[in-house]
Image (cartoon, rainbow, N blue to C red):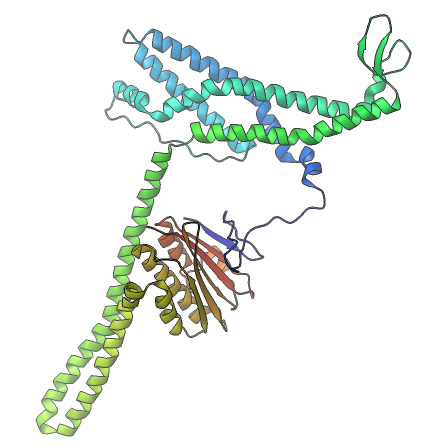
Length: 466
């Protein structure tokens, strides 16, 4: 689940927006263009130096991890014929997991890579033997050991390359400032590229050679940050792929969360239906029964009064039936089942108090569950527009893009919905947090752009098949 907020042309919360299709508007977060080109900024940016420090620390920390992993693993495998080998091997894996937590912290601090801690070891049985068995069966433990072994050669390479490029780049770029510190046999300062030991050789000492050396150094300085970022990306992949939680465990956790959301949503829907029945149709039917009872008693005494009461009861029956139809339509309207989202949303828009233009460009029908969630989402958003936006018009756009169902609801009202939601204001009835949870239960996304006074644009993305 992801819900984004924005108020000046972009979403927050990590939502990048959509470019739309067939003229649909796209909204995204785009950084403000800097007057200094990125190639000139890169050597001085904090990111470059943090990643450079990370690559420098690679070597000493990898030596520690590699030495520990190889030593303990070799010791455990050598003793595996005895009883001591198995717990030693388990201790080696546990130590690799602890070193992995250090690596995740280093990546979080210097690479801005937030990798969640993997699932802990859960022994099936209490005691030392249960813990040893759980560690040895844990795929996470073996991935930490693999990281400790594989990262060492990469750490040596990245350390040497980054340090060499950074040192030689800045040294040669600044060569015009310090070349005079190298005296030569000809009394001209400069670095000797080659010589025979008797004063004959080639020196970088005249202004042209000094300038060319500085220009080459500048080229190295400008190129080095991108090389460093490329090598840091490799480290990010290794840390995220080997030291993080397994994809299966992550997916199981997501499914457990989504299952809880689905259960809570279903319970909330049942409470809403019960409340609507109790406060609406049920109350009217109770009043109708009482009116018919009074009319029955007056039927012989005052037929005219009884006829008026029956006529009023007939009106109550019509009202109760309309409320029951509205309630059924809110659950899953028949038009949605029979004709699909386009006609169903057009019928929904016709009942909105604000003029709504509906555009649905769908090559086929999505899964029934996705249709129901989409219908409910549009219904809630149009209710918000009617009650809270003060808008004069609204639009509903529906299309398919890359196997996903895209929905965009926009109005020209007073805006501010994102700010109210971010501040935790549930009293205004926006219900956006509930919609985000409902969409997140099916791997959907909800993004809100609602600057104060600038209207509101809500974009939703759902899977085509649930």
